Amino acid sequence: KFSNFCNLACRSCNSSNSSTYAKVLDATVANGGVAENAEYDLSNNDELWNSLLKYIDNLLETHAGVGIGLIGGETMLQVGAQRLVKWLAQHPQSKKIKLYITTNLTTLHPDIVDHFKHFQIVSLTASIDSTHNNYHYVRWPAQFSKVKNNLQTVYQMPNVTNLTIASVFGLN
Image (cartoon, rainbow, N blue to C red):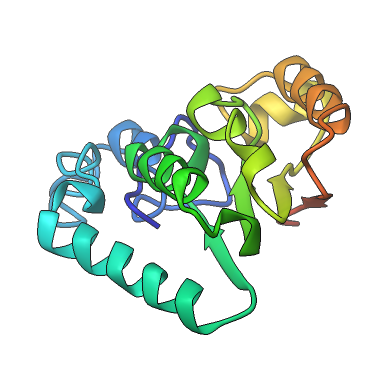
């Protein structure tokens, strides 16, 4: 997780996991400036970034396969996730990588999706809590039609090995 940057304010979420949620609720004071820091991405910290890359390099050198999971906020929109997927795709041992991404599937960012072909496995977990009219209520401000179109796109991607739909069940 590189940041809490997210384009949605889901009813099942909180300001620590969604910058939009934090901004909508004006949680800057209550949560120590979460909304104000929403644009901060850990990949902007050179020391942390280089440490992460060195760690992954070591794993790829010492293991037959490596699983890397990315979560959000919204993973497809996080600069750090985009940078990491690009770096992993260019790694000489990228075919040893099993890439796991959790997404709300409101967007399929090309800086991530275009690199799927470089990995051994790409597994997407789509966090979808409802459908049609209720979806907008639960996953504000997203529209279910966009998610439905993205599901169809993912279903046709030859490089996506697994697609799981995960729901957060609640009273909504």
